[in-house]
Image (spheres, rainbow, N blue to C red):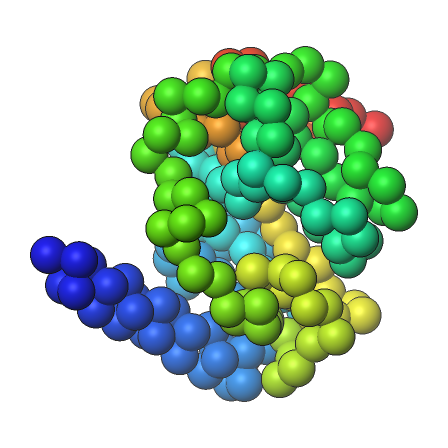
Length: 190
C-alpha cells in the first residue's frame, strides 16, 4: 500500500514538474485549472489560477519556523497548533492573521517530520531554469512578472476552506486579500 501511494505520488509530481517545465519553456506562464485564467494582461503574469470562484491555494503548514528563510516566504505557522497564524518573512516573521486558530485536528492528517524525508533542494521553479532560493517548495523567478492569486467574489463561496488558504476577493467595493487560518478569515485591503 505504501509503495503504491509513493509511486502514485512520485508520478503525479513528475507529471506536474514536466508540465510546469514545458509551460515555462514554451509559454513562460502557468495557468492552473484551465487554459484561460483570470488575468487580462498575460504578459505580466507568471502563475495564475482558473476562475472557479470557489478555490484558493494552500500555504505550507510548518511546525518549526525557519530562522532565516528567503524574504517573501509565506507559511501557516503551526508551531503552536492551538494558535496557528499565517505569517510571511521580510527579515523577521510577520503575522498576517491577526488572530490565532486551533489547527490541532488538521495537523493529525499532515505528515510529521519522522514520516517525511524532505530533500533540501527539491522544489519547483517557474520562470527560470535555476534559482538562488534554497528553501522554497514553489519558487517563482521573475523580475517582470507576478503571481495571480485565485480570485473569488466572496469567501463564503468556498465550501470547505482549509487552514492556510489564500485568495484574492474580487468584489466591487471590497477588493482585498483574504487568508484563512483554520477558523477565521483575515482580510487586507489597500
